[in-house]
Amino acid sequence: MAKKITVIMNTIMTEKSEAAKIEALIDEKYKLQTKDVNVFYGDFQAIKEVSMNIKPNTITAFIGPSGCGKSTFLRLFNRMNDYIEGFRVEGKIKIDDDNIYKKKIQLEQLRKEVGMVFQKPNPFPKSIFENVAYGLKIQGIKDKKLINERVEKALLQADLWNEVKADLNKSALTLSGGQQQRLCIARTLAVEPSIILMDEPTSALDPISTSKIEELIHHLKEIYTIIIVTHNMQQASRISDYTAFFYMGELIEFDKTKKIFTNPEKKRTENYITGRFG
Amino acid sequence: MNSIQKNRLKDQLFKFWGIACTLAGLVLLVIFIGGILVDGLSRIDWAFITDLPSRKAEKSGIWTPLMGSVWVLILTALISFPISVAAGVYLEEYAKKNRLSALLEINISNLAGVPSIIYGLLGLEVFVRIMHLGASVLAGALTLSLLILPIIIVATREAIKAVPNSIREASYALGASKWQTIWNQVLPASSGGILTGVILALSRAIGETAPLIVVGALAYVPFAPKGPLDQFSVLPIQIFNWISRPQQGFIDNAAAAIIILLFITFIMNGIAVYFRNKWQKKLQ
Image 1: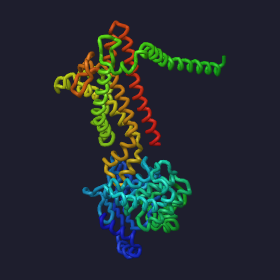
Image 2: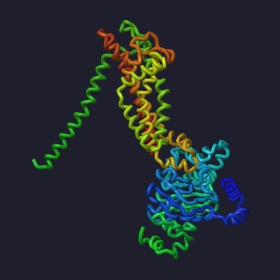
Image 3: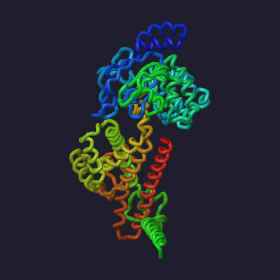
Image 4: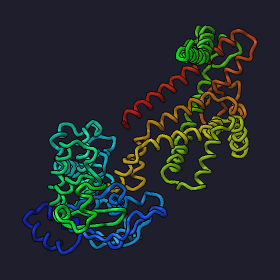
């Protein structure tokens, strides 16, 4: 799976003219597919029978009240729930038609394909450069020129280059919260994944940093498939193409964002987005 | 006197009681160190450090026990550091939280409380007799390593626990394996805390006397050890030996050796504090 898609993705990135043709080709397919997914933590069922298909190069927002399972569901796609004691999953979860919960899967390979940005900026207590280069170094890439190129490219993509290019050896912890979060995005981009998961990436940031990151996410859509968990209704309506509303571990409604926010099918969805509960 | 005044009075009384208690320990320590400085400071010169032991107090030096202590210290560090850090990493990062690991944990904490002479007896049986190492530097260092293993393991675990989980998650999410995450992120982030633990444990080891006496460190060794299988003495044993002599000259020698020993431990503790501060800054 990974190789083929990487090739396709690289082509998209380098040759814009070809992009439309190839996009049309893979548009038929879904990037992510889940079918009848149940998740348990011990005896507690966190996700109930969720089926959902996500198209490539779209932004999907997961919304819902705290504890509704949206973060749990997001973390299924890069298997970050595996570290939680008592975690168990049923059903099918496929990326590019490949079951990511099959026995033989290599987690390292999966996570190169599926990057993640967390709620609180979590840069490593190292230099800016080392933060971005880390994902490449652990792959065993030693070519300094290649690493330098990818670091610069990732920082440019994350709209951070101009602010940090003067001193890449500065500790990442000296950056502001918003810069740290963009650094974390750059760190994810440097590995060149095809999917980026974002778990409330702006909830710890001020409005200016938030708008910068939203703009950034909007641009990234051209290359990546993005799923974003958010508590902010405006954010979901501003940036996403599709919105999924979760409640008590169930997927209540999943549709085009426009539809969800103007004319939702279910009463519960309407109540939530109009602020009547949650 | 109304109740507010009564409470104020109690407040003041407790404050002064607290100050008195705090000072009691400190004053005793100052008196002790002062007495030793008066007795020993005039005795310390370069010759005192580099001279071999002698029957005459004024000609005696601490070269052999000092070198014995240095040998033991270095070997103990080399043996205990890799073993206990690896054990700490295993318990914190790999071991599943079940009954077995809980049992291991309790026993490691218990080991930290076992009297040091017991370790001496264990060392005597296992290293000196069964492994035929004799009363050597190596046997002594192995014994002291056993003694400080639980201390470093506990310190390592505390340091690793203090590394925020978000750093591990970030590393895994970028495709790092468990070992890559531990080696590149967890250990560097916890190195200050681990080093602090190691140094404090070693500064305890350098002051230990009982287990080394049992293992067979000698009170009188004519030459400094040249290899790990040589006989040795250490500073605390030399101090004990001198202090039990009737002549005033040897008492002064003991005071001077105590100053050197205290100096070494204070320096080591100072380094430990330095690492701890640096480490805390780095993680914030």
